[in-house]
Length: 337
Image 1 (cartoon, rainbow, N blue to C red):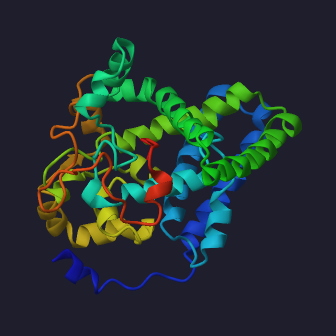
Image 2: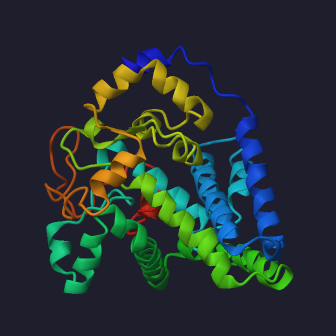
């Protein structure tokens, strides 16, 4: 039903000017916040940097889905500068597009953004590791521990991949290193901005804010369509996340630009809610009230692995990849977006 109705939606523009304007705004804000950091009170600077960095993360997500132009090279050029420092855009692109294989959503191995564990992997964790993972099943734990845990685990997995001799991964990190060196030259050598201040404002804080969005986006369920949530009535964080709070709509139509998501959702709201079995929250305030100190779900996947559409479980340690980025994305958890 939804797919039939979506045929009437106008085709995507060749150049999406609202997105271009936002990219220009974020770059301008980044330059201004780094250059004029001495003229801004530290608390205000940190708030502005966190908002700018979060919007930048949302724009990177938008760009990897084919926006704002039809030129992949131009789009990737716009998204590559590492404002967050710790995350290479190309690795984010690879893992996130792998996450969009909806049949594998929430799978502990096949979904790079899954927060679930297999029982056998859970048993291998130390008591401290289990405590840290369990704490992150609450929103408070995800915000306080999640950025440090996710960055450390991501770097660990990437380092292991490079050490075993994956040349593609090494090339990505070498190119990322060049960009990071240029960014740090501007931040520290030219602007005189302390590294700790930049890291807190433009890396850790945006990562934590992004975790508010991703915290309750998915849940384990046998039926694929019931694995993705919708957060309505988000008038502040929704625009900051470029309306990716309407997450089920995004997974159904990942090529739809951010500024059209609300209208499409309102037009077909009943169809979307019927399709995802009414997995909807009334704003992020509800998520804070329900899950700030209470677990959103279990740490271990209820069936060990996500079921396929035919109801079968994977028979191999890792299900066969079915898209071009799956091999590059394999082996890395990126539970940020």
